[in-house]
Image (cartoon, rainbow, N blue to C red; front, side, top):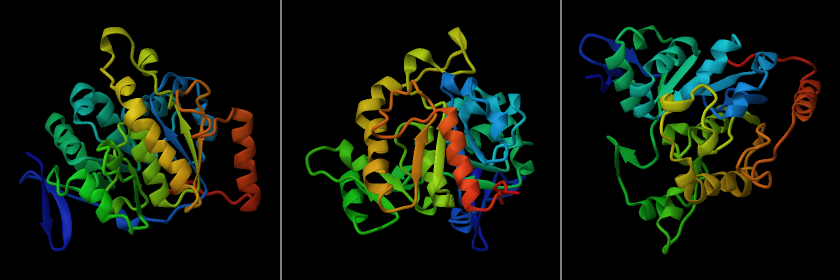
Length: 298
């Protein structure tokens, strides 16, 4: 079993036979700027001309790595915090781990991936550990309400608080991934927090359709994995992105855009843009930097 070890002040993943060093999120905080694409798995991702924007960094997650492979785009980051996905679609998890410049997974995802193929992780150039806020060894340290109250003065952790409603205390946003991240019940929300942590100021989300009925672009029929989007949308997903719009964006140089015109997420929460608007926003960024654009991670 792959386990998390602390040796010489550094963290490692080890099963006794291999030692995989963990890069710390604190080392990459604020080191990037400009625009980034977050690639989710909704059907609209299958229609997006990703290769046209290959000069910008792309964060892939779960099965959206298929689009990167089809479009010959090397993802800057590959994210996964669902061990069920790794167990059910190990081929895609391995593809993401092997092709991305940086791999970020939860410990149970690393364990599932390593169990499937022990050769993958030792070959990764950069491995980071995704950890939820208020968790130690997978268990909550404080109650949701107590944790929400404890971070009320922390500028890096923006959280709801309620004495009456338990769910409110589970919803928040982390600007510092070394302190953990809030799940939001959808992986694009973790990717949004990562983008903020890295220093990107203009975030374009692709394939965030958020509809269980239309599924994912890379799977159909009986092969489709179950989804809880409908159950989680009103209670977790929508309130999480509202925190970005109402509490994060006013404090940080973070502009979030949704490239899915049919997304369930209202444009009043995350503005929706067409390709022509996307091109104009990127052109404006290039003009500010005098055309000097370097791919993140290059």
